[in-house]
Image (cartoon, rainbow, N blue to C red; front, side, top):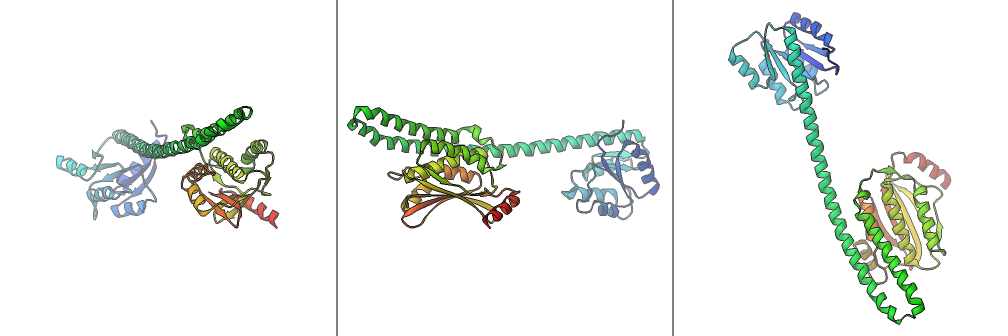
Amino acid sequence: MKQTGKDTLLIIDDMPHHLKLLQHYLQQYDFNIRLADSGSMAFEILGNGAFKPDLILLDAIMPEMDGYEVCRSLKSNPQTADIPVIFMTSLWEMNDKISAFSVGASDFLTKPFPPEELVARMTVHLELNRTKQRLTQEIVTRENNHQQLYTLGQELETVARLVGQHLQHKINALQPTLEKLSTIQATDRHKELKRVFQEFEAKVDDLSFISNSDSWKLEKQRLNMQEIISPVLSKLTAKYPYLKVTLPKTWLNAEAYVLWIEKIWEMLLTFAIQQTGKNCQLYITNELIDSSIRFSVKNNGAALTKTQIAALLSNREQPNIGNDLFLVRYLVERCNGEFGIETKGLIGNIFYFILPASLDFGNTYNRYLSLAL
């Protein structure tokens, strides 16, 4: 039966007619064959990994460098150590066979041998080596998967801790509002209670999204920010009719998890609106910084203090501010990005996140420059 995988062979023998006979016979099995008449020539062919055969046929008795020395050198080199080596020799003593196996030979054939036996042994060792490679790759894959699962477990543990802290903050923040309900007229009490629980339900939904394991089964994609942000803005303008938003003329292409970026925009814009109050104006921009894209949201609310900004970036609650931004920061960092807050003067805050640019951002950036000019 002929080979179908085009296995590569290196035959090493100092007798030219032996090389030709083996080459002629084995070519019918569709092997890709290289010949070497000495150990030094064999190592020239192998080079620094430029050619790596699937199997080596090696004569034991050769001048200068014999087969045992060649095999020993092959097995001491990590690039060639896993190549099966079949010795071919006229030696037949048991000690000769033991010597061959001791230097790393996979098999030993005594000349003269039937060519069919050679092919049968070669087929066995080629298949054994393929099986070994598959098993090795499977082990590596499983180890990588185990490491990924371990890392994911640590991430989810962190999320669970943060979610628990944030829920406790929200529950504590509800207490003063619930206490005030007794002083509110009965006609307004129901509205206020409904508003409080709608707000709380929205926070729980955000936290459920983050902690939901399905949201972690994602592939990074090139982001179409126009498509991502449009439904978010539609939802927010319906909830806050007074909202005014200025968008960039064109969007630069970043790369991240689409589902997370949508949630980032929703939470970040909501915070910027609520921090401003009525007559809120948002200015959304994007710009290229080295090989990353910075997306910024500037509002016209009262400038945050340094203490408040530090609290927002470190998952600490501040009176009358709350802290939904720790989730924004957490998701941005999981996208290999960066989140920050800047403020200038007494009015206005800039909330920004930086993401890696998409590999094809060049064309979009050229359009961006043409519009800017």
